[in-house]
Length: 371
Image (cartoon, rainbow, N blue to C red; front, side):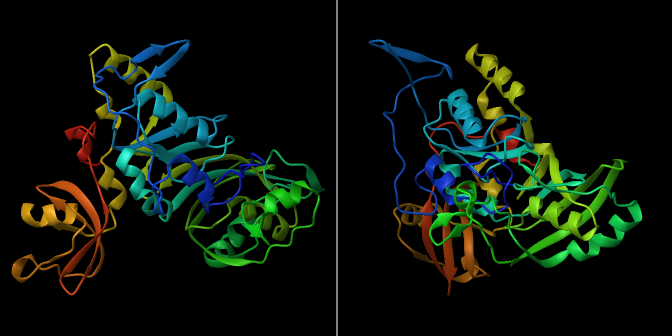
């Protein structure tokens, strides 16, 4: 679920690429990330005084941290906090999570930023509560009420409706969304009082279930959906068809691509780990998941050290005989079990597209095995 950056409300499953690219410059383009001076520093909270300013040393940190984001924190704030805790040079997140929401916010550090698109394109799972009887202009609890109804849906009526919202459906995005209309963001136009008419588009909802109905005014659902799905719009449309109105009043993200709730770390645990690492009693590497975790759905290709040297220089290699790849398309290349590059394979030729430099702090050995 994505936050409208200018409005601060729940918006869409579809990423706002401006948000991603502002957090790191080397994802999905040719821009090079800002590199700070390399320094030797074993204390993750070390800093140096220069004049009246405190300057924190930054270091190379590579891997994923799946933050269990608390309610009230923006995704941008979460990235800044983790970048500070790890003293990392580069950081970014894989899909904005609204301040109203809690749950999984995958944060990429260092070379993991090169794998962000693979996470953003994956499935998402949400548990959300719909409050019946009111429709709001933002389709969530923070908007202004635009319509009301005294009717409330029965459990039977809700269950009968769910198949209509499962599979590939046509969905009209919310007025307050990051979709562009003639070069302008829809939420900017809506905030200026303009009538925004967005065209329906196909989205895929893999699963939609009624989890609980604590009272007549609320219903709790779980949805697993593909890229581009607006859960706010789902609540809005269900309310209309059921003869009442509805909006999102609670939201938690439980799955983002390969990352599930088992991978999430609460902020207080991260801060405690940082304190232990600063005193020499632990390592922040224990909180990292390997860069290649984001590439679970991509075939791996092992190469020799000689071929790895060529690929690392950006040169293609031709593999023959038993070393020849059996598939074509995107692969991630390893050498001696270590991630080397993202590459394209065709006719036995391996062409490197993104080369990884994992010098610095990486995930500890124990984190290389998924829970």
